[in-house]
Each structure stands twice: as structure tokens, then as C-alpha cells.
Length: 116
Image 1 (cartoon, rainbow, N blue to C red):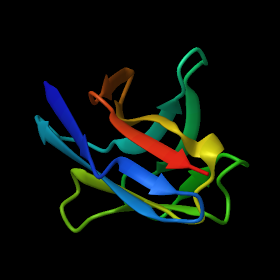
Image 2: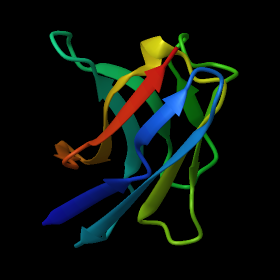
Image 3: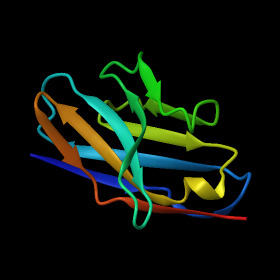
Image 4: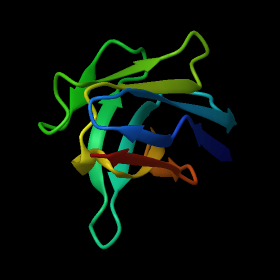
């Protein structure tokens, strides 16, 4: 099974930057994609960004294009989310996701708060 641990969240002022990290551990045989989602209180979870198993293909929500960058580390079980020009609307709990075949795995989330 998998265990995903996010880190790097915190409090930042509008216009600032944060870098989120996710480390996955467990049985990691085969290819898998990794992604970031976020959820604000009282709102539905929304897709933020995703990266393919080889780190070549990336996908972004329109709301973060040009500001966020997703990448995979040298260790294939790591994924990062570089967040620049942060806005108050970016506030929420950010969750790391691993999709392997038909199974999705989730981390516990890390809080990102952007103040104005």
C-alpha cells in the first residue's frame, strides 16, 4: 500500500511564494501519475495540477496557469508544487494524489493560507 506525506504549507502574504512537497512510500511498481488538489472550507475539492509518471507531461487548472509549476523529483516517488504570485483565493488544504491503475491514494493535506 501507499502512504503520502505533504509538507511546505504555511501562511504567506498575497504575491508571495510557497513550495509544496509530497513524498510517497510503499509498493511503487509500475507507472503512476501524481497530482495536487485543494479544498477550501465549505467548498468542493478541485483539481490544481498533475504530472505524468515520467515527468514529461503536465496539466494545470486555468486558475493557476502561469503561476504554479508541478514537477517530479529525482526520486520518482516525489512531487513538488511551486506556487508563485499567490492570491487569497489560493487558500485551502492542498492534497497530494497518486493514481496507479484504477486506485487513487491521498495524503493528509497541508494547509496553505494566503493573506491580503
